[in-house]
Image 1 (cartoon, rainbow, N blue to C red):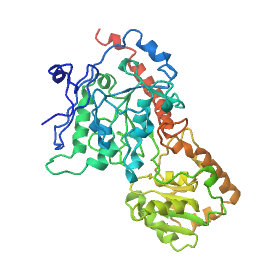
Image 2 (cartoon, helix red, strand yellow):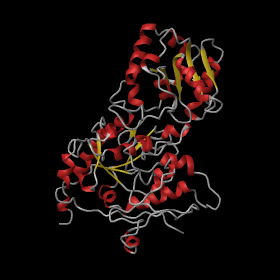
Image 3 (tube, rainbow, N blue to C red):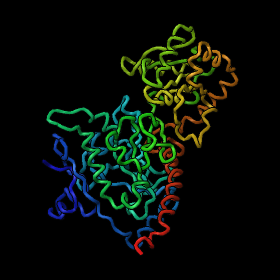
Image 4 (tube, rainbow, N blue to C red):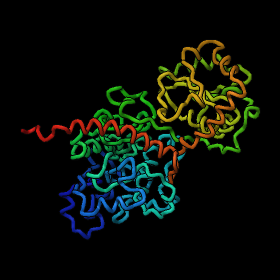
Length: 453
């Protein structure tokens, strides 16, 4: 069985001229299509001290290791952990796709897969940070996070595993498999990180992993819980594994088209008072959806129906949200959903009925300026929600609508990334969390010289 990635011993057995090997950090090599447990192997990249003048060369760039808030060391994982899932194959000595042309970058699958594509956008962006300053891709790129090639220069270690896509595509057993590819990748990732000196030194606290889908990284999350996670919410995590103290909440990638400022219908052009389209029968905290359905389904100015992406669901949702004053964002199986971010880019004032929701970048954004919050118990009272929404004046609604149009760009994932978009907001959120992590690590290091005395 051909391993996907082998270590230093295997590399030493191959001649230096073999195109499958390089003298730099180990790269991915072709894998067999019949993936079973143990078929994916990870090796250890060569760790070295910075070469003479290397730090100075990095500082000489326009966006360098000194000026960036985050100095990111990204592990060179095999392609099947990231872009290989998108059909990209390693060519020659290239460990990563050529990101100089934004249109040539590997494309992420559309539909609902896009909702949890956060790791993809972060990886593209950090790869672009190493491009020359004159490149079109980085001309307007903010200097929040920059990739460094030496672990000793880093203050965060990024693990570029597309965990959400792995869950979406590789969770089901294929013919001949005894263990799903998703489980295999998780198991090998854990082995790899546990062997790393950087992980062992601080117990993984300065590592960044992106299991944005609520069901992703299910088998490995507890073992890797010391790391900082980028999540959609905490609905399927125990507090000892994920919590707001150490982790970052990032927005879903919206699937509806963003409205331009001049394309956004005003108060009078939105005849629907409240809009909801989605699954109605949910578990746990999502049971309030069923209660609201029975309360609102017959109201003349309320659209409350079952719907999905199938049968032109996205087109209908686009039309429905853009002609509604308020869009209901009700807890489902988990506290959050993509519906909130579709509402934001549709400039439909979100009504959040989810008691346990955590919101992206809430330390920087005051959601009460453009959202209406309602406790689930209050929303379930007959007449309560309608009285509340009908009591909001045209002037008050317009103020929230204007604010929505100003904050929409904070929820846009894109490549190349731009100032204040979801990519840079996420990196900034990581940087703010990393301050407290660095404080903890520095305090732990106070007496390291006296431990063995």
